[in-house]
Image (cartoon, rainbow, N blue to C red; front, side, top):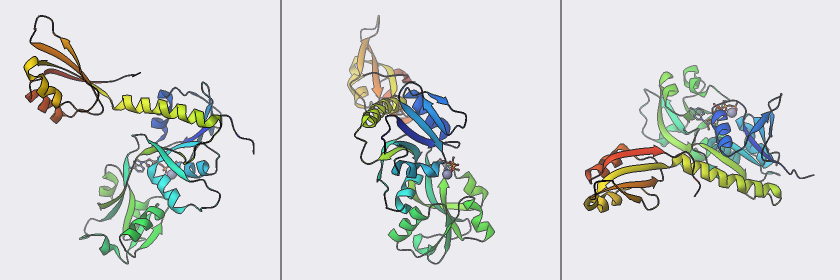
Length: 298
Ligand code: ATP
Ligand code: ZN
């Protein structure tokens, strides 16, 4: 088989992950010419193309070597790892967490059930689209329940009488409430990940993947960085600095006409909460600003 010299990334054609995934790739400097059938998008700048598919097909496409990388929910990736046949499929890895598409795979019971713990599920029927992940959880908990595999509309199964409870993805919990269900156990915390083979290709595509991972790290780091600006007097400086959330050493600047005052500038590695700001203020800071970071080249 002729090896490809262009990198191919699989992502969801239309769904929750589509827009954020395209946005992320754009921030990594990748642009695409949309082809007419919209299954394949040719990369214009870098030799990186897109394959737009159903999210469930993404792990298989990578395992078979049709695509080199994929943007897919951890729930789909882990389910594939647990259920796919082992023949000729390359083992897959999570290369990066991407910070969108967050949800959890949870057990939800009917609201009126007096749920005490997994043991109570013995003998009951559980509807799910994730038989692999659910089966593993049941085994871990030593529970013998029957798994009813459904492709969709899992949440209405108890009402229809085809199952006693469900195991499904939950984000806000609104769908559960609307169906008189109550979340009890979380089996998996999920978000979109960059998936790929455990072993990177040894040709040009391996170099391209490394380049892409470096850009991705920059994009993710900037997205999570905040610039904190504040004023403090020299005698409260130490107390203020001690409370700064993570990141490199702060920069100190003099304030014109106020020799006792300093302006402090610090890069923080994540969200700065109101509580943290209030604590820093109590220690002597004033005029505090938290700014998002647009681009960063260290
Ligand atoms: P298709 O199979 O056609 O690609 P889908 O219906 O399986 O689409 P979406 O509903 O778009 O897929 O969900 C894609 C992914 O988004 C899920 O696998 C999951 O990782 C994530 N996700 C985040 N929140 C939710 C949620 N509330 N319900 C379902 N998926 C969610
Ligand atoms: Zn799907």
